[in-house]
Length: 315
Image (cartoon, rainbow, N blue to C red; front, side, top):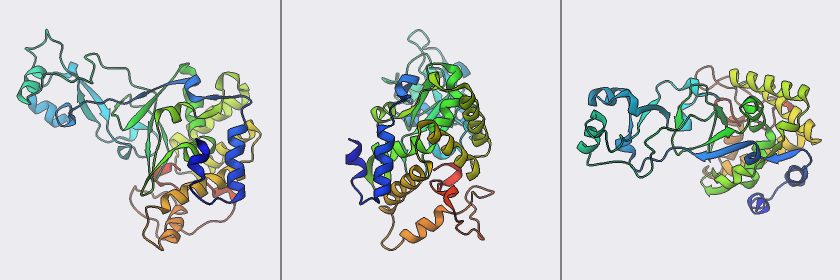
């Protein structure tokens, strides 16, 4: 299945070698599903009714016990942590059959809705990690420090051992995970890469449970630095080199391969002749303010920058 993904392009031999190497580096690796549960975010069946903003909920007088904060799109997250979401939305969980006198139940009746076939009456616990599975400009796993629920635009990643959350965050934001996603994901045209649940579940990573304690602490520290400073390419490069070293792989080749696959995918969404501009844009520095381009940015040189190239602190 992986070869079907990356053979869609004519690849440099080094890129093909890197993809094969990461597939064959099985010693000490486990699929993500061995280290974490993966679930789809919330499906409502009627977003217009069940997703509200704070002003709507207040205007309708809906009781707080039926509401939970939610992030609806990866675009709401600046950087790699949900604490950056400026105004989380609200999701309404339907009242039970014996709560028909509540204002929440009255609101639903006014909308011509009794309940949701998808939402539970008891809200789930927020997941520690989130992943937006429809990828265009960036592949990013987010820390959910704000404790938000997530819409079905996300997969939620719940570590089986909570103490491994930090190391999994680091591993999932490394070039090893990024290359796996590029190689195994399904191209949907116009530069879109879609990751299915089974593809995410099969993502191969170093096993946190068998990891050397020193390396684990280094990963946790780099992951925390990346969370705080997602624009810093030096942190991402150090993380990539550490994870590659743990697997006995060449970080230079992995980063080059990930960059080639991502660039080829994104080129499919560009007008004819615009590829050069897209590649140039990938070198631009992380702007001081999201959406503000750096006018004096120029492509740096050297291997340390290969594989970054994405907007707002992600690949």
